[in-house]
Image 1: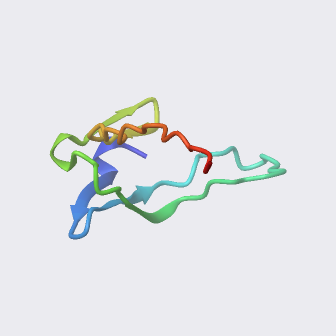
Image 2: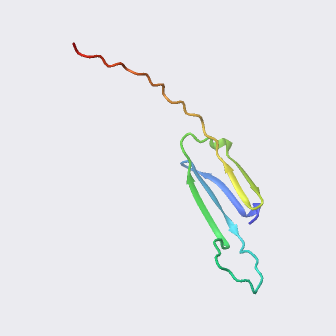
Image 3: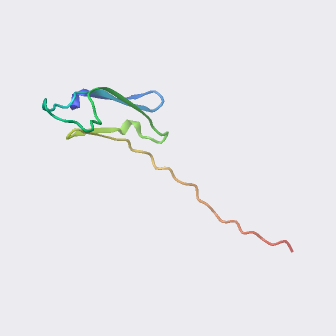
Length: 90
């Protein structure tokens, strides 16, 4: 798979779609396969991003056959909690 074989797009509703085409790995004619987890052909994956995703800052990098997609998120501040003392009824 090459960088030019992969397409990344953001669809409506914060859905990140990664699709592309991967070629079947070359193997010698007399090769014996015990397990072949990856095959060639078309692929497509969709990921629903959280509401706090910074969609305008999404970055992708393809290096040594590995695609890394980085989606930064806005920091969400947690509401402060306060202890309430319980009084005894006299």
